[in-house]
Figure (cartoon, rainbow, N blue to C red):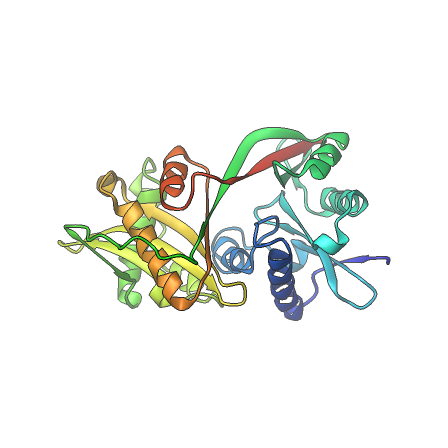
Length: 308
């Protein structure tokens, strides 16, 4: 059956994409060979709304069958940073080759020297895509992410109290400045404080369809200082919880806060009926933590790029 490619056209497409990603995730036995719906929402309402602000009709391409069903999707995370989402029923080297051609034509970024540049993500075990990328002139950059999974079907270890801290959901808007400052401290520890841009961005995070206040967790010291955080995105259709982001302020690290807040999140997910939890990391500290709390095993995603 022939597939037809077209760019994103309307808000209806977004909601069709969400359903498509759910189906693909389930067909792949809940392995993240594609984005989850939760990642799509987080990208749209935080990454794109707050950072890149790319028009949606410039960052999504859809491949549909004659019945109008989505078979595959190409999308940017950052400008020139592209992911291939393919339904396993339609998976083929020919389709991915066509998708790469479309990405090179429409989604590449132009560097200062005038060259085009496209980044593609691929699972380490995806030999078909690796061979295709090599044939088209791509090379691994050394960049990578590790995907960690934990089943929630079995009882979890009892959560241990953490002296000096309280783990709880984020409060109302009056706590957004403290939550935003904590995020800045966790992810920009070496940046000058003058670069901090305020807290209004968090309102967009809370607009995401899967956002739940009871899964937006913070660790607060007895003195009232925000010390650690994680936001968990629970998709009740796939019964999966995705932790994104996770952070601890530098001055509160090495105290067990990362493990404690992840464990609290796992217990909350299990009570909601989730049967799987996932988290992705790349730094040595993050992956060491996730390996202890989730599983030592992980799936590796690699970064490829081409200049022309």
